[in-house]
Length: 361
Ligand SMILES: Nc1ncnc2c1ncn2[C@@H]1O[C@H](COP(=O)(O)OP(=O)(O)O)[C@@H](O)[C@H]1O
Ligand SMILES: [Mg+2]
Image (cartoon, rainbow, N blue to C red; front, side):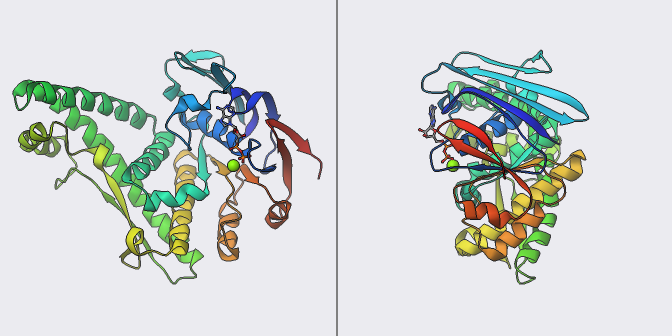
């Protein structure tokens, strides 16, 4: 998969910029606060309709503007053009000049895997981050998942509203059939994808640690049933009605799921050193990359934000070849020496105060 060009208007500190990218490695180089990460954020937004830095998408609108516009050309065989317009009141998106209904209809057309120093919070931070990681990963490979997840969220809102209004009466639970249906689908997909990621991640982790460590990743669903089936999940919710109405919300479900990480049997979150956590998360991301590639038969783009300084030599060695294959890579850095450490032939873009210029190397 190739991102040929990117256009930003009134996005963060960019007024109006168009960039033509190359195959292979694209380095975004410049001092701090010039707009390097903003470029990755724009690419990420076109892929996922989200930012990886904030849940407040309005903050992406340039302070001097009232809307932002993103566009890109994707070339893999037939060229595709995506466009997104985003303002406080309007969200419009198009694929090859044809309007689509929702921004989320574009998810999965451009596919990305991101590496950032904040990835470590995937392990250390709250479960919301892990669910978000998982949802974005699955959404990029499975269009149906996007739809079901949205449906689930709507049903959840309605159910919670009804519970607050009617308490433990049957009218609170009119949606439980639909709920069970979407929950079964989401749990099934999550379980399957985590199992596949876990297998790969363990391989990478053994590699990074020269065989000294095993990484185990486990899905920890909040709804506990023997089998993931609509019938059992419905029964679960039925059993929980009293509890849910006492607590005035739906106390179990995909919105409460989590993922556990163990190194050599020990919970990484509680007992892992910083180094182990970094390796684990690197293995996780590499596994995500491998899964997406296998599942879609296309190589996702790799976005790497300031990752080189936090990787020691060992992990750099593990990071770079894992990016191998023929991925197109977008990597930011502030230090020229980092560019040299990549070694490979790369295209360098100088980022300066909301401008991007290609450098001759
Ligand atoms: N909504 C916004 N409108 C205008 N400028 C913004 C907005 N959000 C962030 N910025 C500016 O973007 C710059 C940071 O960009 P960033 O890409 O994070 O920098 P870096 O090059 O360090 O990665 C800062 O100068 C910040 O003030
Ligand atoms: Mg940055």
